[in-house]
Amino acid sequence: MKKGILLVAFGSSREAAHLSLRRFDDAVRLRFPKIPARWAFTSGVVRGKLADKGKKTDSVTKALEKMWFEKFTHVAVQSLHVIPGDEFHDLVQDADRFRGGDRGFESIVLGRPLIAGPEDVPAAADAVMAALPPERTPDEAVVLMGHGTWHAGDCMYDALYDELRSRDENVLVATMEGRLVIGDITRELVERRIGRAWLVPLLAVPGRHVQKDMCGSGPESWVNILAAAGIEPRCVLRGTAEYGDFPKLWLDHLEEAMRDL
Image (tube, rainbow, N blue to C red; front, side):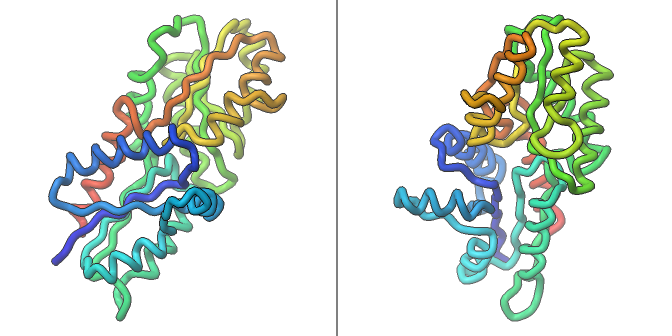
């Protein structure tokens, strides 16, 4: 038996994002010191940009093929997805191609995303509340930026939203896709006369979405949407893979997958 770990992220060509992934990689190797770990990026665009810089990265399929050639027999796949949306289910399909048969592993198990179901919501909310900006005062809002999706898995953002609001009515969730849009959140903050809002990524790494969509200079960035409504925005430029209790939640899911191999 030869066990291995495949860590999966969307990927980013930005150095700040790679720093987040390296920190998570260090945490994985500390938790599983005897198990080799590999990486795969799901975004072909990101892999192409990195290739232009002379940095070779693998797709999920390519990484699993390499692990098969390295004679791994049991592989735990852990992604840094927040919810089980479209991209996570694409990963499930990629992994299924390596189950059994002449070119498959004896066992391949997927670890759950950060919030796979209702049972994960309280721990995720604990992690959020413990990682709120220390400078923030109770009358200021915190808006978590999730990716969002029109997949059914988007309901996990709603569940987290409800759990957080039950603890602090000024901690909210908005997503770039899906139902919880920033425009609705902004209108609510205006109605409640909130003067300042902290924007915090609910994304594994501070990549393009954080740098451009959340905190960029364009008129549709979240900072400018808030500012146009008279709300002072503050950006937190860090991903969940590198701070607080978030890495532990993914690591716990990976440990469950390792036990199921």
